[in-house]
Image 1 (spheres, rainbow, N blue to C red):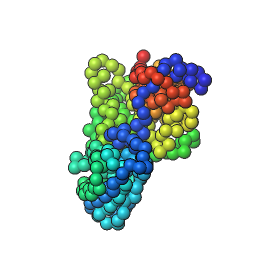
Image 2: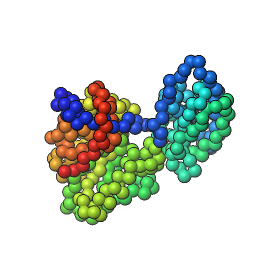
Image 3: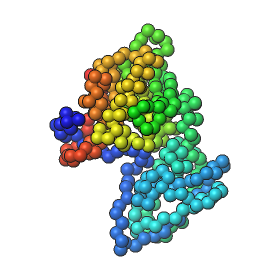
Image 4: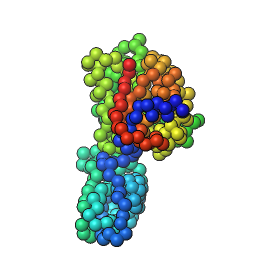
Length: 327
């Protein structure tokens, strides 16, 4: 860990804040001034057929988390639910609706996650909204992986347990289109954090997946050797599990002692650090940097995108984007 901290100091890397289950805008609440005038915002929603359980309002104010997916339980039992919240004058309010988690967020007519709803609070407001639908349980999308439009094949391992971590998690394994056609070929492996965001827009937190399969196929067309991609879904303990000062050492044990051996046993992989990389974004990028510096006997390369180096205990001034791939 001392070497890891030293490398951080040398690199002087800081990037944008964590994307931890936050909707499309990174807006956060502003401190309230007690003398500031407040207005009442009343929200009334009409639910789609079949929704009978709790519905929650979430948004960019402290009273809602901020952005806690079960921030405020809306009143009512039937198709009409209501909520009221006091907000300061001229506050730019952004909000969404969920069934209690980001996996069950409200979606638009296309079935995809919508941008944040927004309003400027300049008077008492009454808002009426019809919600078309909510995201299905992720298991429904997993069973219909072809419906994601993915290039290649997706294999899902559901509720993978770990002796080192408190939560089970799903794992997405992407195989390039040629995998079945060349049974003698072995492949390098890229492990990625926040695995639910990689391939399927119906599952991705923001409604837009990272397009990892498209990117891989574009690289193949340019002559780059294909690789297997293993996406490990995050858990409710994402921040702690990706933090080198908290549970990242245990997360590393999960990867190296439990997941890597299983992947190598089930798929035609090329092993060793020269054939194994880890890529992540935000806190996931910090995790990638940790793994390639502290677990170099397993991971020989890393991709650190928008890395949350601001999370380190020493706060730096310079911001540098870092992104390294296979050497």
